[in-house]
Image (cartoon, rainbow, N blue to C red; front, side, top):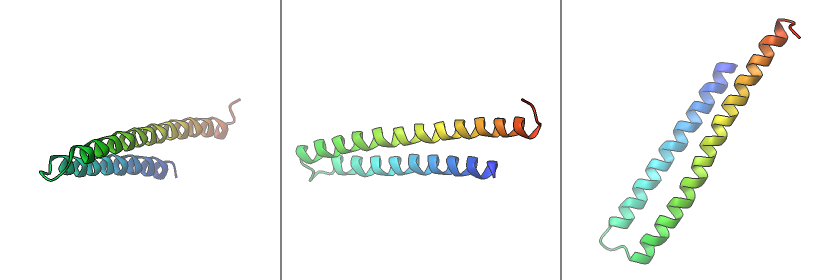
Amino acid sequence: MEQSVRDLCSTASGLVADALRCYQQAVDDAIFDNGASRTCSAAALASNASLEFHIEQLIADIKALQSIHGTLELLSAVANQDVV
């Protein structure tokens, strides 16, 4: 069970990072497209910055969950040994 939670958190973190890289590439492609206007480019950059902030927060939340899970594992191990 504990390995599954770690694997799930790791997979989720990797998928979020991959999604951000793909999105940034799409924004870069749109910005450097010869037909893109400056307004479009500015909007794409603003949207990218906002999404990046939210994804970074999600990654931080996933890391916090991993830490909480580790603490719960430790408490469970102590409880299973009848140590108070």
